[in-house]
Image 1 (cartoon, rainbow, N blue to C red):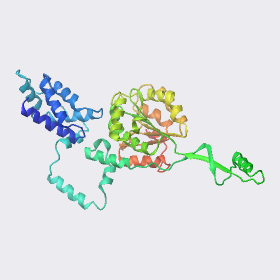
Image 2 (image 1 turned 120 degrees about the vertical axis):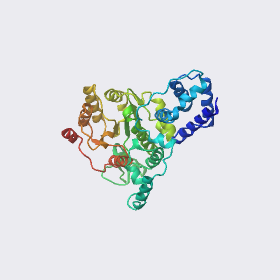
Image 3 (image 1 turned 180 degrees about the vertical axis):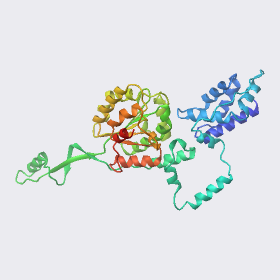
Image 4 (image 1 turned 120 degrees about the horizontal axis):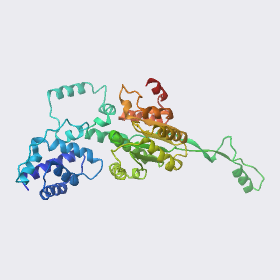
Length: 398
């Protein structure tokens, strides 16, 4: 194997580590050996050879695609590699289309931005405005899909600090109380028997309270993948605080990931969720997913005044009658149904899609969740705070 090829593979692995991959020296040696023994004949062979070596988690697939397209297009490196490994002449590379959205994280990992005149002016402006706005406040307003690798890690640290409000609700069960209006007759008779019936000491009871369960239904289709990962970090953070947090992912099928989110390390928890959900970044069938949840899981996880977080864009075209029926059944089975839709981040959003107009009559709140500020607003809303807008008003506006 030529030293130039090994050097480029090492640079590629270094850039992947900057983007969040776990690519050590052993992976570099494996990649170089695989390229030498693979008998490469096309760009696709190089892609899948490196993919088999470096991609260990499902959530790394999108980043690897962006990194491969960005790194190996420079100076036609793949064509030069195959020319070194093959005696036959190869066709010139075809021009590639425009880069896909969401490649900012990979681009920064490959080449840190150089200081330019505009950057110097921006630094001066940030210095003059430091007394009015902090980096944390700026990060809270940043869209999750536009965050760099460093901003994503900082956002995850802030999400871990979020604390759910003390929103305890009364249950049907009773507990002993020092006083009150409800007399515990059984305990009162027991106390009188201990004293031989000479005196009667009243005992009181009150309704026991506990935190209502949180049930999340997370859409992991291709259009929601960037936001669903961040929401799973949020669910992992509140799972550490509450035991009764149930999470389900759905695309073309429904998957229960509640136990996986109890894993202590958040990265490992998300990796396990990605392995358990084979329909990650695929299609979506909202009505079928709600039907499976209502039929199999609703009686198990919804008792106790559960709050349901439905995370989806609502872009459903088929089976709207089934969607309306299942959404109504879900709404009647829980205490509050909150619909989280990242499309609300657009100022010009209108409820025109059939799936959106079908879901709106059956939800209690319609909120956006695309940055940290909206996530903090969700935490306040779970405690009964914040301003609540009637979701049916979107139907009139649309």
